[in-house]
Structures are given as C-alpha cells and as structure tokens.
Image 1 (cartoon, rainbow, N blue to C red):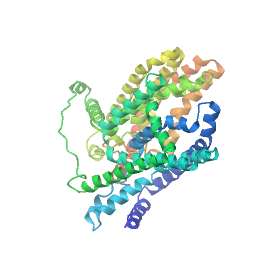
Image 2: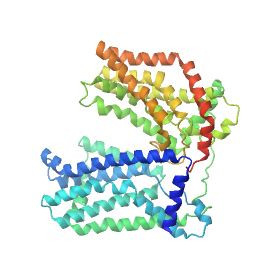
Image 3: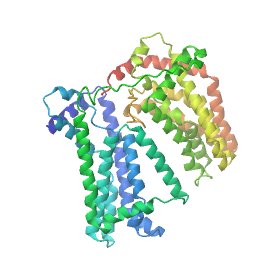
Length: 489
C-alpha cells in the first residue's frame, strides 16, 4: 500500500503543469541541502576543538548547556517552515483503502524530513570525536541516541500543535525573555536544563526516556488524525462567527479605500498574513547584526542593512502581490476593477509600513547618527524604487497562498524564477553600487545622497512606473488566473 501511495505522488509530480518549475526548485533545494550538510559536518567535526581552544570547559558539557536552545529553536523552525504532508488525503477517503494505512503513511513521510536527519550530520561526527578523545563509547552512544530522539519528538509535537498560534507565540515570547535574561545575567535557564542532557551521558540508560516519549507522541499523532479523518470532521471547513469591521474613515478615498479595507481585514483575520507582519517587524533588528559588529570600516554594509531594516514589510508582503488575493482573484478579475487602483492600495500599504518601520528604528541612533541615516536612506530608496519593483515582480509570482497556514511563510518555489531574480539586482545591488560611486569619488555622505536621490527620482516618476507595472499585470493576467486554479500543483 505504501508503494501505491508513493507511485501516486510520483505521478502527481511529473504530470503537474508546473513540472519544470518544480524540477528547478528541487535542484536548487538539493544544492541548499548540500550547503547545510557541509555546514553541519564542519561544525560537528570542529565544535570540540573550537570549544577546547576557547577554554570554555568540557566541550560535551558546553554543548549540553546550550542544548535546550538548540532543541527549542528546532521546534520553532519546524512550526514555521516544515510542511505537513497530511493535506492530500481527501481523495483517498472515497477509495477502499484502510484509514490506518493512510495515516501511517502520512506520518511516516514526516520522519524523512530534512529537519529530522540533518541533525545527524552534526551529532554523528561530534560523537565520533568524543570517542576519539577517550570519552566512554557506550555513554557517548547513549547520549547521542537520547538527543536524536528529542528531534523526532519535536517532529510529532509539531504535528500535534500545528496551526496553534495560542501555544506558539506565547512560548516564543518566553524563549526570547529567557535568552535575554541569560545574556544579561539575570536568570540562567541552562543551570536547570543542562543536567538533563548531561544525564544522557552520565547514565546512558536514561536515553530510554526520550524514546518512550517519542512512542507516546507518535501514538497520540496517529490517534488524532485517525479520529479526525472524516469529510464532516477534521477535513471540514472551519466556521467562525463573523465580525463586522467597517473602517468608514477610508471611504473618503473611494475605490482605493475599498481595497485598503480589504487588505487591512486580510492582515487582521488570517494567520499567514499576521505571521508576515510579525516577520516584517523582526526585520527591524536585522541591523543589529551589522551596526553593532566589526563593519565600521565597511559603510556600504550599512546601506544594505538599512534597506532591510526599513523594508521588512515591503519584502515579505509586497513580493506576494497579488497572491494574497488568490482565493478570490478570479472573482475580482470578473468585475470592473481598475488595476491601477488595486495596485495603488498595495503600494500605499507598503509605503505606510515602510514609514512606520523607519520611525520604530529610531533606536539605532544609539549607534550614531550615520547609522540611523543609513536606515533613512534605505527607507527613501525602498519608497521610491523598491516599492515599484516588488509590485512588478509580484506579477510573475504565480503562487496561490493559503491564508490559514504558516507553511511556506518565508517563501515559495514559484517565487523564484528568472524574472524575479533579475529584479533582485536593482532592489539590492543598485543601491550598493550608487553608494560606492558616491563614496569612492567624494565621501560617505555623498554615497548616502546618491542612494536617496535615486529614491526621490523614482518617487517623482510614480505615474510612469505604475503605467508600466499595470501593463505587466494585464499581460500576465490569464497565466495568473490559471496558476491560481492549480492550488495542488
């Protein structure tokens, strides 16, 4: 039976109309996986020696000390990125196939996820190094098995709490508070968690405990999906009480106000769009990587960081216009709707978010006025240039978005194609080139002025830019409609 399920998925992949895109994406994914495998292998081999050379103490104990953060962040990464393979079972319910087989097959697919086996490329070489360094082999094996069981526990816990925002976000806040508390020396959670991981080595038999927990969560996952595997139960559409939100203050803007209302409601009411807003807020702290690091002698990096600090919403929301409206886009296109008004509403939303992000980023003044100037310059360039480019690129992104789930919240295979990649050049490379020219021939301030001037010129030619973008959307209209009908492709 499992072979039959595999054959169905194999045919679905090769017979899809988006086969070429899928294949290219799979190839790119393989290269990305190979990169991470090399990174994990390098860390697995070198972690022991790096810790030993730094004089931090027993390498195994140091790893165990911070293991709690590793395990928890793995769970959060799964929640945000790991795709649940239990969504294509509806057609199988009409066939004479045992439900137990369908559920076990779906759960079994998650075991093969990269999120599970990728950790082995760190822990296997690290364990081998420990044995070579005269750690007790049986104790190392017990420690290794206990740790690996925790990652599989994460896999099935993620299945059980999938789409449970009321659990996810509060725990995320708690983790952030614990991390900040440890960094500033207020409270160190690792003093209480490290002994648990140490016990897997000191008392190898304790490795049985996480495997027992794993068996429990596997059975709980099976029972949950087996119980809800009915068309009128777990697979039924969720019904919620409707709420009226008029936003009458937007009526003064006519049709533009109507579109803005829809966008605000979309963001407030749907999980995927709310997650996008949260992610865009996190972009505000992107500059901390560069502004507080050893990059003072490379001011061009400040421009790069400034664009991302002010453009979080622009990049995360703007690149998926019109995919946010994919569920009712065919209906919209059957109405007498002007593309210019539709695109203008998205543009104004992006501009407002960019301006708000720039104001919130005022704390970068702590690093000096030139640091915040980089954020301001990046905001001007985002408003005058990148705001058009993300809308333009959106015309080529044929990705229907499921607003009820976070999966693929950070990207999608159809968001990567030749045209969107070419548009990345003026988004990120052009401002760096402009800054380099100004800085090379004059000074750093002149470089900032060159980037800002590009934004001002772009803003001045707004009408011309929208005419060109509108032409692209009209040209791609029917391809987009066709793509949105193939949600399972």
